[in-house]
Length: 301
Image (cartoon, rainbow, N blue to C red; front, top):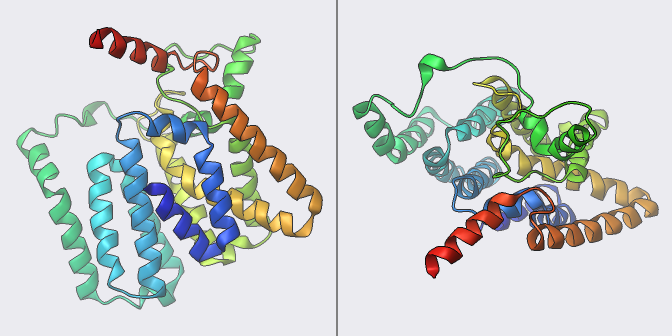
C-alpha cells in the first residue's frame, strides 16, 4: 500500500516517469523487500509517513481539508516509531521557507489538525505516563555522531572493507536487518548533490524531499548513537532518496541516450540481484531469515 501512495506522490509532483521509476527502484530494493517481509514497525511507518506527505501536498495544492488526514497519518506513524516526528519537523521548516503556503491555513485549521493528531497518540501517551515512560531510557540518552545512516546505504562496502582487513566492524552489528544496495545508496547521494547543483531544489517537492532526507539523516546520526548499530532508524530516508534518484535519472535520460542504456542495465541488475537476495540470503550475510525459517518449520512439525 505504501508503494501506491509513493507512486502517486512522485507522479503527481514530478511526472509519471519519475513516479514509475521510483516504484521500480523501491520494488527491487533489497532493504525495502527485506523490511517488508518481516512483521516489524518499519513497513507501517513507511506507509503512514507516505500518506502524511501525500496528504500534505494535496492540502497545499488542492483542498486544505487534506491537512486533517496529514495529522491523522502522523499520529498513526508515531504509534509505529517516534522518528516520524522528523516528518512533522520537515513540514514546519517547509512552511517557514514557503510563506505563500503557510498563509493558506488559519489558526483554527492548525489547532484542529494538532488536536486530531493528539487524539490518535493519546492512548500511547497515557500508557507512557502511567508507566513512567519506561521504554525511554532518557537518563542514558547521549548525543554524538554515528555512521548509522551512512551504514544503511553503504554497509555492504563497510563489510567488504572489513573482509579485506582494512578495519574491524563493531561486534554489535546484527545481520537481522538488511541494507540498501550500495549502488542504490550511491545513486541517492549523487541525486542529492545533483538536485543542489542544478537548482532542482527550486521545485517545492524536490525541496521538501531534500529537507526530509537531511533532517532524518542528521537526527538518526546524533541521537543516542552507536557507531553502526540500528541503521534501520534512518529507514524513512529511503523514499525521499529514491524519489530524488528517479528524478535525476529521468532528467539525465531525456538529455542523453547513453543514460537510458545505463538505466536499463541498472534495473536489470537490481532485478537479478534481488532474486538472488531472496533465494540465497545466507550468501548476502542475512542468516537471520534462514534461522527464523528453520525455527518456524521446526515448530510446525
